[in-house]
Structures are given as structure tokens and as C-alpha cells.
Image (cartoon, rainbow, N blue to C red; front, side, top):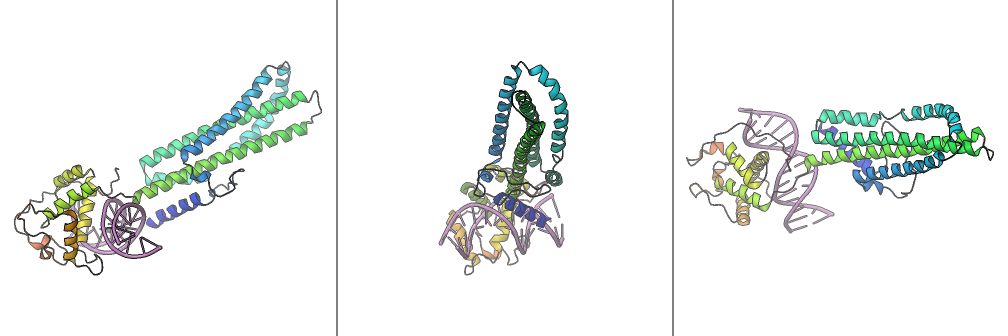
Length: 334
DNA sequence: ATAAATGATTGACT
DNA sequence: AGTCAATCATTTAT
């Protein structure tokens, strides 16, 4: 399980840093400018999608211009009847070519993984990407059809005044289709990359952390050292601390767990004793006056070597540990 | 560049 | 359910 996620992380990293996504569909590199390795890859999702949309609009504009020219032409009605039968031919081939891979095994696999992981935010974003992807794909199809039709109209028309063989027209159509499908490739690749980026960001986020503010640490330390004899805050206390520190209850729990284990631990720097460590901490924070008894600031025998406060049989002074319900692990509400 | 500190995660235990 | 212990992955200090 853990291995798997690490593997995924690695995979995503490779894909993002290196070359194009190679998955269920072998994608040729996008024909074009970027000679060096990934300039485009550094763009974020928004840029990529915007790029796609720009391309689409250009294509549509072009088609629109031709359409207008055609509409005004006197030969239009005659041409259309002829074009209809051609359209039937090419239209099928276009559809056939485009419906081949939209399901996209790579995306399907990603979807399945996402479902398994059940991350709502993640899934929402993925849905958004997918939606945009399908929208764009549709636009492309439409643009391709229109453009093809209109180019053919023009050629047909021109064949009246200059020699243009049907073969030549077919060739032209082929060129257009190839052009469009290469653009489509880019769309797919961009979508895959966007998903990859999204995924890697999510996986990263699991381990991302920010240190608490100095103030928050101060508050936590104060409580800790003020309750050294029993540093187990009740649920209510945790909630209060969480509120004061602007962190979650889980984070408070994590902090106390870490603190307890680490304050006792024998690992504070090779040549530093426990007392030194504690003194160091105190000096750093200015000291915490024990709210109860005022004694015992970090006196080692309060923490028996095995790290059990429970066994320390601490005298009274301990607020009753009214443990409430709750406290869930893992909270990333930041 | 390397070591230490630190917040989060995970599995076991009770 | 809460905790400990070990560990991971990042941030901070040296």
C-alpha cells in the first residue's frame, strides 16, 4: 500500500519532469517549438487549458471566415448537394478516427485509483478536468468537421476554374485530419499531464507540513511543561489548545504525542543529556511555571526512564483525565 | 551540504 | 479510542 503510493509518486514525478505520458496510449510528442525539455510542463493546469482554448478559438475563427465567404457565394446551393455525399464519406471517417480512444485507458486507470482513494477534493478537481476535456474534444470535432467541409467546398468550387482532381481533394482532407488529430493529441496529452500534476500534488500534500507558529508552539509548550506530571490533556483541553493555536485537535494530539516521546527519548544529539535538553528547551522558551505545585520543572525522576508518566504515581495536583470521545487521526485542514 | 528539529503517518498494544 | 514507538518527509539551523 505504502509502496504503491510511493511508486505512484515516483511515477508522477518522472512524468512531470521527464517526457510525455506513456500509458495506455502511445502519445507522440507534440509537434512543435519547444526544443528543450519541458517548458510547457512547468505551466500549470490553467495555462495548459487556456492554451488549448486559444488554439480552438483560432481554428473556429478561421473556419468562420471561410464559412462567411462561402455563404456569400452564388454557387453555394449547387455545391452543397455535391458536398453532402462527400460529407457522408469523410464524416464517417472523422468520427471513426475520433471515437477510437477518447475513453483513454490511462484516464480510466487514474479514475479507478481516484475512486479507490476516495478523496473528495481530488475527485472534484479531476471531474472538472475531465469535463473540460470532453468539452474541448467536442469543440475540436465540430471545428474539424466544419473546416473540412468548407475547405472542400472551396476546392470543389475552384475545380471549375482550375484542374483539381478528386484525389487531390481527398489528399487535402487527409492533411486536415492529420493536422486536427495532432492537435487532439496535444489536448489529450495536456489533460493527462494535468491529471498527473493534480495527483502528484495530492500525494505531496499528504506529507507536506508547516511548522506551527512560534506563538502556537509557545502555548503548547506552556501547557506541556505546566502539566509535566501528567501531560495528557483531556479532550476539552485539547480543543481549547487547538482553538488558541489555530490548529486542529488532531494536531494537538500529534504534538503531545511527539512531545512526550521526544522529551523522554534518548536521542537528543549524541552528547547531550536529557537534562541538558530540557534546560535548552526552557532557555529557549523562557521557562514555564508549573501551574500546579511550581515544583518539578522537568526533574528527570518525574519521567521514569521508560517513559511512563502513568507509572510515576504523581501526587494529586492532576486534573482528572476526563477523556472524552473523538480525536481522529490525520487532519489536514489548512 | 549536512544535521537537527518537527509535524504527520503507521502499526501494535491495551 | 488513545497512546507509544518507529519512521517518513519536510523545514530549519549549522
